[in-house]
Image 1 (cartoon, helix red, strand yellow):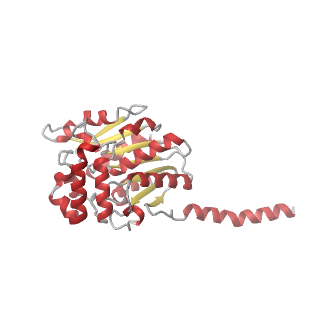
Image 2 (image 1 turned 30 degrees about the vertical axis):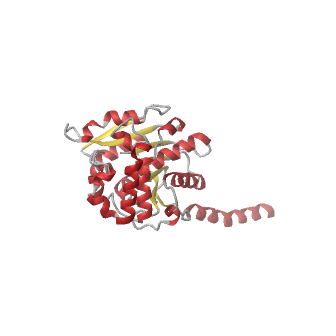
Image 3 (image 1 turned 90 degrees about the horizontal axis):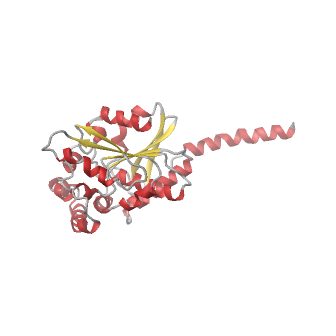
Length: 296
């Protein structure tokens, strides 16, 4: 009996400590994560120059039924850059996301990434598929492809866009956000009006010049098409679409389907009519319906 009482005493003191460890903020020089709600885990990753704020409406609808983990990438918006000012961005952020999943003990979370966040989600899922220790349950990419220039030319390579990416990098680094606002063709007006949509919405929140420049460079040059066969999680691709033949987005169906053709299992495609690049902001109700189907 004495031993039993002693054991119970230890547990009573230990359990609060274990609970507080789960609630303690995740210490990272790459990402900041806000978690709220209860239930199955969903991770939301914003795109270039965006913070978790872009997911506000989505998270508010999900956190009654799910445990929502809202990511902000350091260096975007007003989030201090940390180590994101040093070198590459997409791969280290994806690795840090997987560390978060492992340390928090998330069970096969659903991961939703917008734009550059879609690249992060794909990279994390590909790496998880290779080692299988911390699997990702399912992936939704929002207006993102494994290689963005392929939306213009399926045969494009990183080498083809490298000179333009270098110009964009230097312009943003030297001149700041104004360089892109005034010259949106640097990131491709042809991408279905993506530049105009980003700069005209909540999506573009600015940030640290070095991190923004590196992020833009990697959005233009990162090619994950060869990593798609490593992904074991089912993939859903959501993108803005227009029935207007004069709108470049009316012609994106084939480009998105071609971009994901090397997945092990065919992707599910959801086009959102009336949305541009910021799908979850442009058409929130239609986007939430797509998320419901993705989670269901």
